[in-house]
Image 1 (cartoon, rainbow, N blue to C red):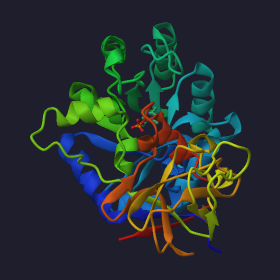
Image 2 (tube, helix red, strand yellow):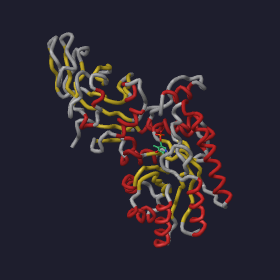
Image 3 (cartoon, rainbow, N blue to C red):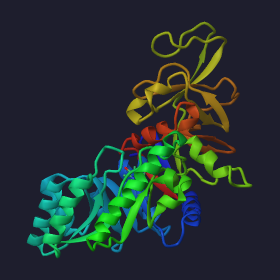
Image 4 (cartoon, helix red, strand yellow):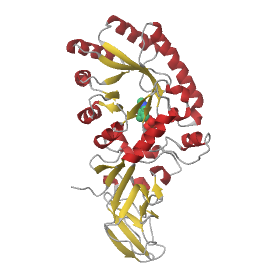
Length: 383
Ligand SMILES: *Cc1c(COP(=O)(O)O)cnc(C)c1O
């Protein structure tokens, strides 16, 4: 059955974005496509094969359940990397399936090496180093313990990578902190090298650092938001286009989140619309009811402030977002009809709605609203 809202992924827009990213980073830099958060709401099952068809063969996820979803649909040669959560009792599944995973504590390392011995396989590990984000990652003393452990059990693992995560490369305000992090990263990489380790991959950069700090790409980048056609921040976009003649946005958004008009109604001047008294009609109005509420993933914080596209016009959402419905003011469309396409995110004609365009506050809303798009929405990939 179709759901009240639907998601369409544009393969041609995705191809365009990967061409852009590929041109940006050098040939010898591996692109890992970050598909955590259900591929930022685009849908792992739809997105991963589409990205593979663009030549991507490395995917990063947060957790083991996401890894198992990618596992079911990926091509044989495609590699999965878990950056975060693995419960101890699922390490055996991870190692058996040759999934790469991050080590950020000694306990996980010990359990992994034990499991590797049991399975006569090698644990394919990336060691995450603490460089100043202060979230997960091993400090110098812990890294030295890891080195001792690894040296003691040389045939139980493959040290695929050393990595760290930068704390806010999307803002120039963090410039000093980011540089300090990479300095620490290099020192810790040298520590491993001095002990004879030669990891294949060094990686620190997500989308923002890939754009803003070319030197921090090393030989792998973890690209999330960019591939979906969004910028990590306005600053990152400005940073990029300020060095270009062409000032247009080089990315294409690949998602269209759409619905349709479910009901239309004439409202008299002075009437309140939807729950409570947050919106009062200043004049006679035509309103369209759209089956997209917070249960469908449409943020309630966009009550009286979001926009939709109908008949290639940008129209305001009025009143509160309900659990299953929102209301748009369609007074300016003379012949709006039930069944008309409504764009919640994406393009229609020459107009486009991006999540962030609702708010001057931050592009973080892109990440949040996209990744909260419910898994159950009907999704399809279009050419
Ligand atoms: C989410 C994430 C990324 C990708 O971030 P974007 O800003 O979307 O490119 C990269 N690395 C890690 C560790 C992440 O958690």
